[in-house]
Image 1 (cartoon, rainbow, N blue to C red):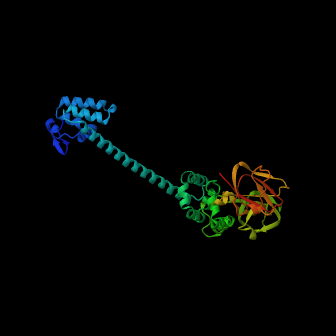
Image 2 (spheres, rainbow, N blue to C red):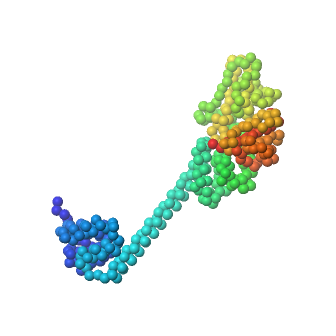
Image 3 (cartoon, rainbow, N blue to C red):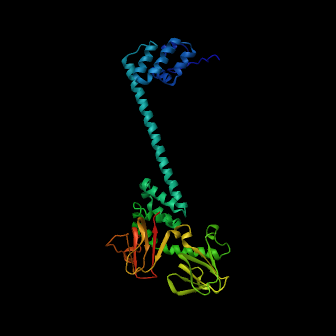
Length: 380
């Protein structure tokens, strides 16, 4: 196929031959055409073989030449009269244009980086607001918030904390477990005061689960699949069937239930419904007697995050959690004490702990009571 001839635009003039190129020669335009390859194609299709060969050779060597050297070579190839002032003017303009282009590119790049940064922050906030049950996802997001978005978080911290308290308390728990971020919910008195109700909120949530169970709609599949049932005749002897905290959903007439830690109080099927027991003992005298219950540790969300311990330790320290585990202490009883695992000399009581959300490295626990309960949350 015969090459299509085209004009070369030089100094706004459509150039068709070498004479017109020389008469309208503009080093800025020629240099740009050289860099884009347009000059080489124009020389080739116009069959200016000598000049084409020289320009092609210059193109091969151009990577090792400065802009000034390339411009000087182009002038010499086309035998254009020029002086150092013309070349200097070209170089100054070319370098200036290059700098302006580089600055503009850097501005665009910086703007894109800032936009990406803010977009990732907004996505992270959405994750923290909408993820209600997966603590691992929330903990990772809070760590990212601490490491990458601390300054943005500080700008709207109180609004975010209030929003999380209202809509996703698991986020606040993860923030309290984060050494860098935990200062914020603790320094705002109204938020700190609200956090002292976390166990009340937990109890309300559990009560809502029981109300849903006995309602027409019933529990959702996620919870209904976690219901446990024990049925059988214990010959009116007490049988321990659970060591975990459980929500009693239903039992039938003739059964009795009691807590593992309080053998003096027994519950009939009428009064057992909807209460939480720390461990579960069951008594019956018929094969069709049963109890339905829901272990609290299987309820997704912050309910299952709260760990309890109850028991008398005989005046000795009992190690509950390894020092590798950061533990957020929510509440202890009046006759109980905690400390970081093995931290001799530290003895924190209810006055030091309750409402302060102390973070310990592991847990040593001491209590003279069978009924007082320790509530805490372990970092994951």
